Length: 349
Ligand code: NAD
Ligand code: DAU
Image (cartoon, rainbow, N blue to C red; front, side, top):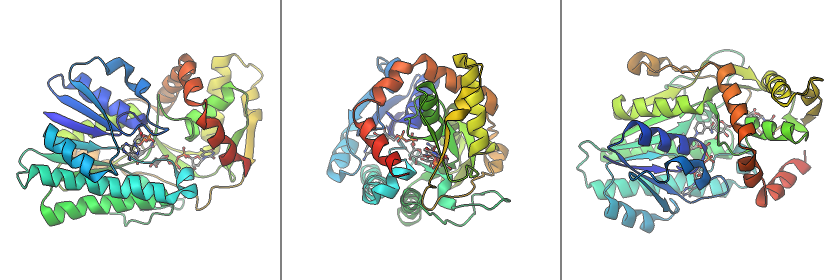
């Protein structure tokens, strides 16, 4: 089988590429990535010499390029992760999110439909999406697969739109699709603009930890390796046309999570005085900040038997170890353009 994985040089995509290559030695995996600020081929150093792995640099917003690529490569399946993924950036530049996430997804759907030409047997278009499409919860309840869409940020609106297009291609043209909506991921190789790697980086450099608002927003955290395992299960055994929610039943207020992270970092860095917590700095809240996300993943557990493989404490410990063992990776991705991003994003708060 020849699988196209889009966004494979990013955080989750690199874990998915690694997982498929290691678990399925008879599959060929082509990774298509534009290599934006978030895409980094260093994330895949361990697989780059695998004879079943290919990398193509390209933009999913470029429809004619995609048609050529699909015609040439005759992919059997697509696992689509490429996207602009950071909520704060979407608030600054919404149009970029429409181009990458909406137009890019429609271009891919078009290319798959055109190349597969109605012969859909054994083909699959797997769209990787987010729980943010469901909007925000109050103190109770969980998102299920039937929760109505109610996105609030430009990022989540663009992902919601892409989900709708994927379902439209299924209902209109019979394209075999599957969608999963996952909660917040954490783990190695995540760009340090997202909460956990940003705070690990800032704690190591003794820089302020910018907590939005009162720090009481709740996120439901899942180890990225468990997300890749869930994608594998759904890809191979999910029902075409269906949606699966993925989550770890692991809700944390931001401030509790940050305090836990500070304790782990103090221990790892030998800061016996507990000084990491003194870096916590409350800043202006994110505009339209969703209060709480919580995923009901019971369909995935019931139908496909997937459960997370680690506890949050275990996963966070592994994650901190990875960043501390790979400080050159952090230094590299936070040089140059990152400095400008960081200054403009946080100067106003
Ligand atoms: P990321 O920002 O780390 O990686 C995105 C990748 O897509 C990068 O390698 C980037 O270069 C590539 N890309 C962006 N625009 C592109 C374009 N126009 N053409 C080709 N490649 C392009 O993102 P991530 O956190 O790994 O998220 C991957 C996917 O998973 C996204 O679709 C996101 O919406 C979804 N998701 C993320 C989370 C999370 O917690 N991070 C949770 C649920 C779902
Ligand atoms: O729920 C899935 C989504 O999770 C994915 O679809 C997105 O791609 C991914 O970026 C993530 O979105 P969030 O906005 O939840 O993640 P982020 O790491 O940006 O923020 C997590 C929480 O921490 C959120 O409540 C905002 C808060 N926060 C974030 C940053 C970067 C802070 O308090 N300070 C910060 O500096």
